[in-house]
Image (cartoon, rainbow, N blue to C red):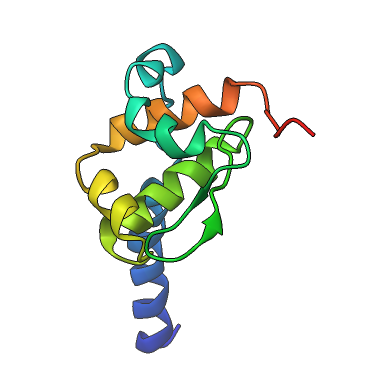
Length: 117
């Protein structure tokens, strides 16, 4: 076996286990703890049909029944600055990874609500 191929295989053998750990799912959240952490969310995300006017007018997405991995990913993106809504960036900046998991667990187990027609 040539040295280049051997080096490549050795590097892959070392890197793959660490990549698997890095991509392992986050610890599950506790919906009961999440229920205690959503008061700051309810002002916008808990009102059926709510629209916000800052920084622009748009419908606020509902979080009830949402996939927990999506909620955690979105919160992390706000915290890292990859999403730009100033209010959400400020809120996400104050959350730990466990807070995010707890909030996501709460909303994923909360029945989907829609605006009354």
